[in-house]
Amino acid sequence: MSNQVTMPEVYKIALNNELRGAGFYSSMARRSKNSATADIFHKLSEEEKEHHRLFQMLLDKTGDTSKDSILGSETAAFLKSLFKTSVFPADAEELTDRITPEEALSIGIQAEKDSILLYHELFTQTENNEIQAMLSKLLLEEKMHLVELREQLEEMQRPKLN
View (cartoon, rainbow, N blue to C red):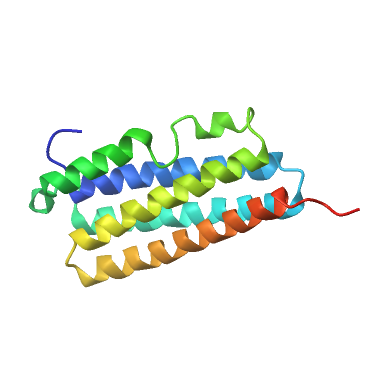
């Protein structure tokens, strides 16, 4: 990524992260023995696929090389910092063979927080009402993902009574 960052470039990164998230959640859904956890992972996988579709629509709306959407240097620096850790790591799907469902929930929690930061930043950087509406919908859904993941992690960590 050069020193300049455009909205279409960010949309492309978001597209990739949504696919990584869908793959990660799908893989964890198959591995989870706890049916409630598997159901949450499956639901999130499907919603991440829908988010991918929405970002493709955003990219289609703005054009692939729109230079009129260059982000400011502070915003670009913030986004580059966020991208370094990536919302979902590149090897997220491969990780599922080596982590517990609890660890996967924690990874999902962090990824959803990062998505919220990213999408909020994108929301503030556009004046297009239609794009803002789409980003607002994504933000709301990512917040709900965060709540669902946290609640499931808390449930799994709660001591079981015999």
